[in-house]
Image (cartoon, rainbow, N blue to C red; front, side):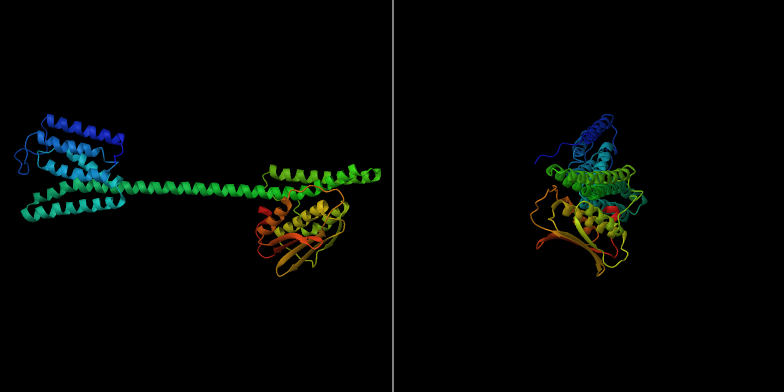
Length: 393
């Protein structure tokens, strides 16, 4: 398998090291003299072999650091047997540094331990053999050439890994923040959709029913009565829409709506349904306080149920019952179910979804469906420790 192309910076190092070594050879500058006891091959030309090999290893310092170190180690040993070149030594220190910095983690650890042991051995063994202080300089030289670059590479690697970990944490934090923002926007849009539907749908449904009746029945008295109901619901719907637009324009987060519906408003709600033509009875059960989010959810569920009865129910009595039992507020709305002869307003089905969402946000239950010849909506809303319905409903 072909090796990856060398990094451009590595090519510059290899070329610079080779040219620098050739310059030193050309001017006759070496690290040892021909009379040095360890010099086995004197003259300038033997220096070129380890120099060229080491320059080639520099090309692999980033793409194959372990191979560069394995090849460079025999080359530096061969350089010791010649008069030596400072350029070869400097390139070897860079290869050790690169092997620790760019190589696998396990190999980097081994390299640091091996160079450290070599430094200790090069310090103690010559001193034990020769018993002269000058022998300690061999350990110093090995430490400078081998262990110091390895230790430097390990320090730089740790800093690099720490910076990369910090960058990844910052990216994850930003991603989580973006997810939280998206979820908050989605929840707020769902809340506003429920509020808009519950506040306006009742009035628009009444307008649609009575306008259809006015168009289909050719009686002036009936048309006038229908137009009166249409006007009343248009004005009320417009007022609700303006209030909602005002909340949105002001941000909605720093203030609550000017009139949050409560259970005390059910009587007026039922009276309005009667004015729209429904035969409604209301039974609120025992009087008692409920948390504001529960009262708001119960009010909206009754409001939407009456709207659906106005659009779809057959002629007959619509019953609304509220009861407190077992730590929950139970809301039940029952309307006649079957074929309807009169005008019918279209529905989107979002009303049932909105009621189910309101109950789920409070940890309650919701069910709706035919029960014999009646359509029954039933919701159970816990009274203890509710969630923030006013903020998320």
